[in-house]
Amino acid sequence: IIHIPCEPFSYLEYNLYLLYLLDPLVTTDFALIVHNDGFILNGDNWQDEFFDYDYIGAPLLTYISCIDGGYQQYGRAHWIEHCNHPPENLIEPMNGGFSLRSKRLLGILREMNIQWSLPIPKVLHKLPAKLEYPALYHHEDLFLTGYKRRELEECGIRFAPSEIASYFSLEDDLIVTHRKLDITKIFGCHLMGYFVLSKPNIVLMNKRVDFE
Image (cartoon, rainbow, N blue to C red):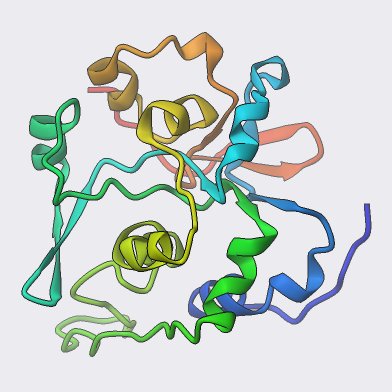
C-alpha cells in the first residue's frame, strides 16, 4: 500500500478531486473507491464480470431524467413505483462511496473537456450558515452516473446495469426487498454514514438507524 499525503478537502473539493485529479495518481486499470462508511461484506462474492464496466456502484433509490435540456430528479416513491420496469427515459444513478472505476473513466472528463458546474445555492433562511443546493448536482457520483451518463456512454463508457450493480454493492435494503435479491451474495456496501470504520477492525454507529 502506498500512502499519498494530501491537504484536507471540503466536500465540494473532494468531488472535484475525484472527477479531475485522481486519474494521474492511479497506475492500475481500475480503482476501488472506499469511504469510511463503505465495506466489503464478503470477498467470496467478487465477480470478474465487475471488470466489464467502467463504473459500478450501489444503485441509488432515485431516478434522473432529461427534460427540455434540463434535469429532473425523482424521489423514493417514484423509484418504488418503477424500480422493476423503469421507462427508458429514466436513469438510475449509482453511489460512489464504494465503487469500482476504470482508469479510462478517471481521465475522460478532462480528455473530453466535460465541465462540472454548480447551480446557484439556495437563499439562507436559517443558522448556522451553510451552502444548500436545489438539486444533488454537486455529488460527483450523480454527476457521472446520472446527469452526464448519456454523454459518457456516447464516448464509449460502460455503466453496470442495475442487476449487476445490485450484487456489487448495497446502499439501501429496499433494493433487496423490491428486487428480491439474495443478500448473502452481495460483495460490498455503502452505509451513508450510519456505520463508519473509525480504526482498524472497529466499526462505530455514527447516526441513529430507524428500523420502522
